[in-house]
Image (cartoon, rainbow, N blue to C red):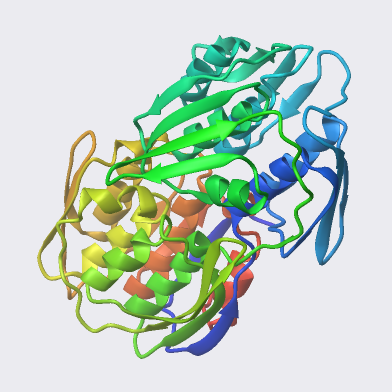
Length: 441
């Protein structure tokens, strides 16, 4: 099968109900915490993407018993610090920054040296942001100028630390939180606002965590060396995956969509808030709380007009994975949209801020790009009648999927490479797009 997709026709109006696979962030975090829980943990609706499968593979190499079935995943562990593995093992994090960074936190107690590597994209990303604070626990590292591959050597008696997380990175915060479990004492984290899935799981597991929420920062205190209970968990649908269909529906003509059981954690719904500001018709219904996480059904309708936005920077963190899609809506708005302080976008699988601008320019939309901001000069009458090729984007799954959405709503003759990139986070993306009536070849 050729590793690209051709799209030559816009999608026709649709009215459908979709069920999206489990949340990737929660799938990885569940597996990592289950590996430290004493007993059997069972997960329903775990995402079977490459990132999650890489997580399970790494844990198996560390001696954790795992069985993956069609409808569930079972992890059996002997508890905290129960990893058993051969000397000089190599763990492959694949494309997953979440796995690579959080796993290092769990390994601060490792007796022997462990090497962690990743694919071409992950090997270009910064790991000093986690190795620096983890050194304070007592772990030692050999890095490739702060990048993968990394060799970690843990310490028998990790010491609690005080850590100021300034980037708004949930991965950095979570890595330190997992490391804190291995200490005798209290680790104190002052963290810039970011996703709080790890904190919610800690609370549900009744781990000794205290959180004082501030306007811009949270103060988190964690006591280590506590027994972790098994976690049986039905993972809600991923809002980042759902976002592709939300924007596809909003930009398509005369279309409606319902997506069921979506995780609407307040630290993840920046995409919904921003789109509503831009005139997208979204309704949130049947909200409930499941083991600390908010879940709801989402209803979306086509919108005829879109408003430009000066995007509030306080929403950046909660929409960080969805900005490529938000940029597509800005392309259709009447006026200039401005997005700033988005340097973190270039720390993803590819330099996404740069790629967001490239895609829009190929479509005929004018942009003004700086190191951490972008201005998008929208065109409500945009209709593409030319060939567009999207390639050499470091196989970034979100660049691929956002390009698919653009092709289906704006027209033109598109050739989009690296279709296999979706296996990282959303293996069924193309089949779900086709279920709405899209013509892809």
